[in-house]
Every structure is written in structure tokens, then in C-alpha cells.
Length: 145
Image (cartoon, rainbow, N blue to C red; front, side, top):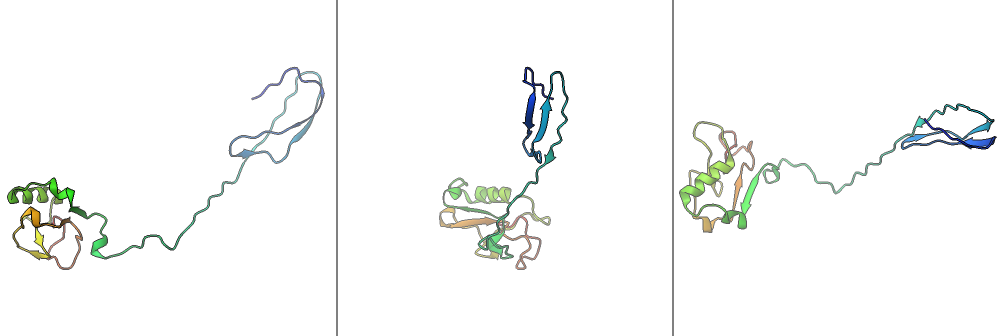
């Protein structure tokens, strides 16, 4: 609601606007002495949005190396783990979380199960839950280290 006081009588063009609202054209009004009421109607403006799709967008892949939920520890991340082999194995099982089956998580060394965990200084990287549905595992792959 707006009120204008002390306007001289005469012809006026009234145009109103607000964010995302518009008026088709200005309204011509002849103002006489006294109080006058003018009702204005505003319309919602059309909103346009542009989306650009590029060919270089990352592609989806079923390759086990592109698993987004994999945790990869290497370099300084390995330094934060324990130097003791038993404590290192416990740390890795804790990072891997719960696994399928009653025996807990599985540690694979160079892709083979049942191996000894090598000394920490000879480890280049550790991958946890790289691909839970990979065919080389005999059970669901959660808890795989």
C-alpha cells in the first residue's frame, strides 16, 4: 500500500515493479484534487535457467578402481597407523567397519587372502572396501582390506 501526499493535480504515468514481478505498461492517470485510489496488478515474470552439458564430464564406470566409497591410505596417512603389526591389523579392521559373515573383515595382501600383514614400512598403500561386489571375493566385500 502506498500513499502520496501533496501531489499537484495533473496527468501522471504510474509504473510499478518488484523483484520477479512486472507490470505490462505504465498506467496513465489524471489526478484531481482530493483522495483517489489506484489498484495495480503485477504479473510474475518468467524465470529462465541455462544448463550447460559438457562432453568432458566424468563418466560412470563399473571398474573397481572407481569405487567412490573406497578408502585409500598412502603416504602420510600410513604414518598415523600403529607400527605394531597386531595393532595395525586392529586399526585396519576398525577402519573397514563391520563385515559380512561371522569371521570379521578380511585382509588381502597383493590380492591374495590369508596372507600375513607385511611390516608397515613395506606397505605402499592400503585400500578398504574397494569393491564390495567384486567377483574375486567369495562373500560380500564389506570389511575387505
